[in-house]
Length: 171
Figure 1 (cartoon, rainbow, N blue to C red):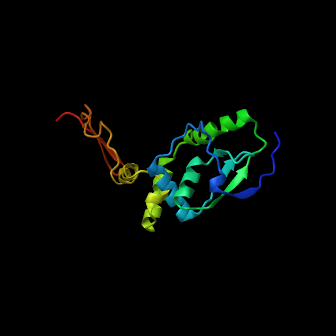
Figure 2: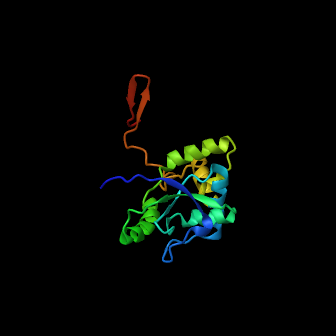
Figure 3: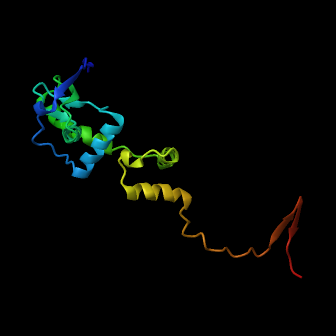
């Protein structure tokens, strides 16, 4: 496969055509989150379109741009894709991102650092319950279910005093 030259174009949002069979949904809350992200960070992820301005990837970003009254958005035209590839990519673009996971310790550390410098964590996209659970979990480590079980003492107790070991025995 060869890599094709891709050019960033600014296209009027009114000219972009959503894919009629797009199976990905965007709730008003998610569109609001994307809008807030665009306001905070800029429009950093171009919309992917076909030769006829049909949206291949970026439906939610276009909806957010429209809610912000943006007249144009950055786009990359993927005119090299076949019809089957376009249809498949509409799904793959969303699903492939869902297949990844999080290193929760690293995520917690990053979020705590951002919280410490008073960055608005609402802009990151996690819901409040997840953030609270993740950030509080570090403060209150989960106890093992066996943490309160006290083991039986050994039949022959052993004590160490400095370099001397004392074996317990009968009286």
